[in-house]
Image (cartoon, rainbow, N blue to C red; front, side, top):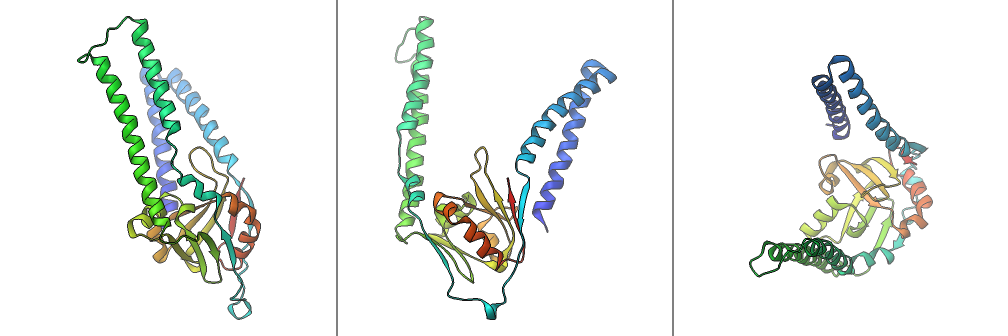
Length: 264
């Protein structure tokens, strides 16, 4: 089953349902002609925004797959990239959360002062401050616990590097997206291995919003255990990867059975 294609059909179905519901609401509020007009204008407005987003990530270039015969391939040829900069993200820094807490408390209590509210131990505003401080404190604790788990996993394999060989890719968990990280933490694997023959698609994304710039791989076979439902795994294009990106893509194209699609 092609989960990606199925997902596209699901998105299309719910898009049509959304348009129908918006138009139906417009008709109920303003009558048939005016309601349809308002509904279509509203859906067109948001449709244009979505279309611009999709256009910004259109396929700009395709690197054709050009597999090299195994007997003519150098099995000693590898690409090895040490990771240094990407490890810094596991250094815990609570200051952004503390500053956000101070700002929230200042704004909240400033409103209390402006309205001449009195504080007491049993006052609702006292407990509101206490709840906010507790929420931020809990966030700090959980973030610290999560980072400590990842740092402990790093200790199992102190030398951090990416390897591309004729067999496949050896990837440190800290440079793959969340589904792979969850697997690595659960089974205490600081590195994962993906053979070339289990990669059925490879796309290069520039990133946007909360999604990092990445190589998005469609995986099959045993490698799907690193993915979520859609069978996709991302390799974050860290500063170390970016320096060798052209070489990596050319090397990969010699081993993949699929083309590499580069999106703008």
